[in-house]
Length: 44
Image (cartoon, rainbow, N blue to C red; front, side):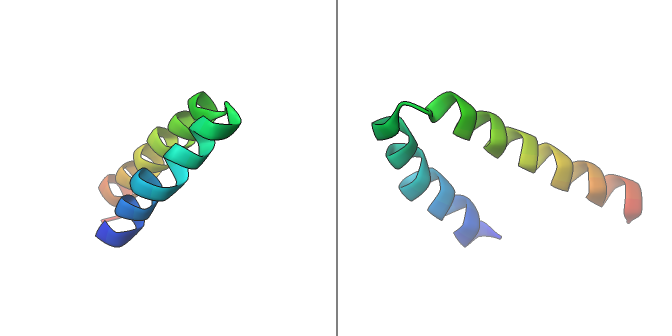
């Protein structure tokens, strides 16, 4: 899981900034982390 976070922060976000869509990428990153943490809390 740590490598996925590294790749998304180090590779995908700078690329999204180049195309001007970094707000959407950040929202997706934060939303995905929220969904994963909620699923861990609810189902474990």
